[in-house]
Amino acid sequence: MKRFHLILLLLTLGGAAFLALLLYPYLSSSKDSTNLPITTWKVQWIPVGAPEDAPPDIDGEWLSATVEHPFDAIPKGKVGAWIHLTVPPTSNLSKPGLYIERLYAMNVMVYENGKPVYQVNHNFDFERTLLQLPLDHTEITSDLYLRLTAKERAGISSDVQLGELPENSRQAVRNELPDLLLGGGLAFLSLMMLLCSWYLNRAQRSTALALTLFVMCSGILIMTYSAMPYYYFPELGHVFVFLFDTSIYILFPALLYFVIHIFEGRYPWIKRVFRWLVVYYLISFCVMVCYKIIGTPMYSLYAFLTLWLGAPLIVGQLIFISFLAFRNAMQNPNSLILSLGILILALSGVTDILLMYAIDTPHIFNLWKLGIIILIASLVMILNRRIASDYARLLSYSKELELYNHQLQRTEKMQIISELAASIAHEVRNPLQVTRGFLQLLSGKSVAHDKSYFNLAIQELDRASGIITDFLTFAKPELDTLIELDLKHELAQIETMMTPLVLLNKGELEVHVPEPQIILGNSSKFKQALINIIKNSIESLHEEGRITINAWAEGGTAVVRIADNGEGMEPEQIAKLGEPYFSTKTKGTGLGLMVTFRIIEVMEGTLEFHSEKGKGTEAIVRFPLVSNPKSKKSAVVPH
Image (cartoon, rainbow, N blue to C red; front, side, top):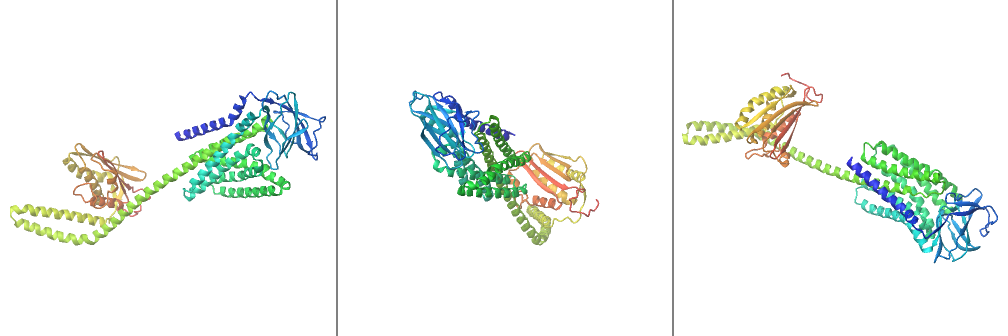
């Protein structure tokens, strides 16, 4: 939850910062008191077939327009509009100029007192532009007539600012520069992401490239939606419009591809939806290219695919992705982050649309940029989490591989020792017994001074015989007879046998078995395995030593816990327990614990150790209960 709160805080702060960036031009312009706004003008529609050089009908019908009611939608049978502006005297200005922030037209012709003073002809499909017009010094009111022609909209949808021309230019830059900076920043970020993606593996690279395309297309959309590039570089207008349309055709397939990989194949049918969407966008792209080449005859099909069909399809795709994200939000943190990003994008887009209908004026879509930024931030977070998860998984795999190699080496050692023990144990044991018998015979006939040497030799032979016995036990650990063993009864006998040895080492032995636990095994081998563990615990005890043995049932298995408060072991020592010839004791061989592991393994049990240096050691032994259906032994000899 702490991470989720941090992510939510970052998204909120980022959204607030970006909103402030969007509102800065309007806040700064509101403080400017040097400009004189012109808030009313007249509108007269231009009929189809009217000559381009025909003047407006001064005595004809003129509509009074304001920012709230601009009358910019071209009616059927019309090709544009005449705009009549009444300009106050400009004698008090050093460099008078007129600034219109939002002017809808493809072709603009400005007449001052009946003379043409400004002309712009755009043959690309971007009707929103801005106008900066220098004016002459006049001491009387003058009339300006703007001839505007376009396909869908022609008119003014913002205040007309009369003021100093340099200040108007700075105002235009302040209004449009944030979009250019934001779009350029996203494009630069996408290039950095593209370079970094080459250092990822193949699976990660495809996801990173999809996110890179999404970020790059978002930046291009924001830059080409601004009017400034079209105003200052009209010769590149076709390129800007082409980039705008192409970015739309790439943006949403890239987003869906990214989502598919985030869900990691959880919904295979999404891939079929993705293929159909790719086909649609490819067809739309081809139609757009044909329209750019052929022109007006392809406009209807282009408008149908891009506007009438494309817009609802984009909204449906966002709703579809939102549904999938929220469906998995509680199971996958990545889905929760994605859900927040898509939700904010959807809300910002819906808010833009509602504002457009609420204020009944041409609305400039700005809030969707906020949604894009937050969605990109959420996608970058998801990608980073994905990379971090893959890195953690890689570390886990490396640890598992190391453990597997360790177990493989241990198995190879066990196999070598088993074969060695089986081949030489019997051959070595017989000469040892013969030698021991002759040493006993000679010891009885020797003088008292030499008997100590014979006794020492006999003890070492017995020690060697014990090692050979361990070898035999390891070489052939199969249990010939399996019977039902009551852990409570077996541990009680072990307590009786081991208590004197514990007391000799100034320790204390406690055994707690609340109820009988029935397992399958061999009584002598079971005692041998547990006695080996208890002996190791006894040898590690210090003053006030204590050994505790507990047994209980847990999930169809019997658990035996042997814990002591001895000197404990390091993690490296625990990892080597059970290996031949590894022992923490000075004269130990490690074969006893090796045999213990093998006996427990044959009884279908497991043995694991937990220890901490200076605090003691804990051995956990697990055996399947008789009632456990997973037990592989079917024949049971009653005890």
